[in-house]
Image 1 (cartoon, rainbow, N blue to C red):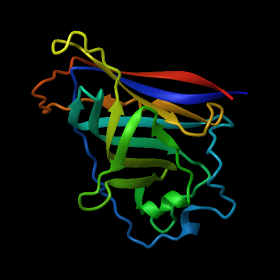
Image 2 (cartoon, rainbow, N blue to C red):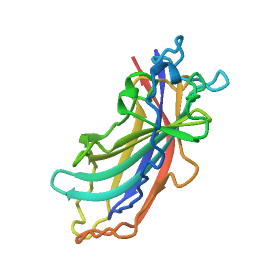
Image 3 (cartoon, rainbow, N blue to C red):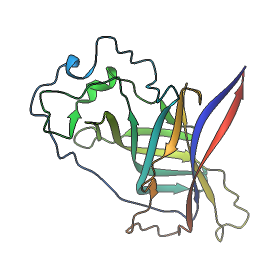
Length: 224
């Protein structure tokens, strides 16, 4: 059986790069939201929110906040990333208690109540959500029923390096983002049209220089 899995990928041509962008929620809930304020009784959180009977479209934005480490011997690179996913779920409701607001901030417990994209990094070695004070994650629900989930994560990637010209070499490192279980008929990953993969200005890497960054979209076929 052939399964077509949606994949988006970032190709980073080393000598490396850094970016910084961070949004802070500016709208706070004025009322204690109940499940029925947003989630109808017939809502099924296991089913994808299809758009016009087509697949759910999840727009991805990734910001590299920091480059923690480049390990040539292990052929790996560790990044701090700000990753944002945006999608529309017309099955939900915008709370009528706060009609004057354009968006509301949802508690992270809402992840258990609504459909969430099952996105992961295919070539990651290890990673975690940063939580120096509190977990660096938040969920916004907009009046047009668009959902935005943003998390700051620290993650290490495996990068196949050709070291024959080391230390005067140029390397390429991939970040491969894909769905864990959904096929392309159910969910499509797309790059957010506005600054889908941006670069900061103040990164300092003593032994490396970033020369190019590119984002691509491709499909992969798995046979079972």
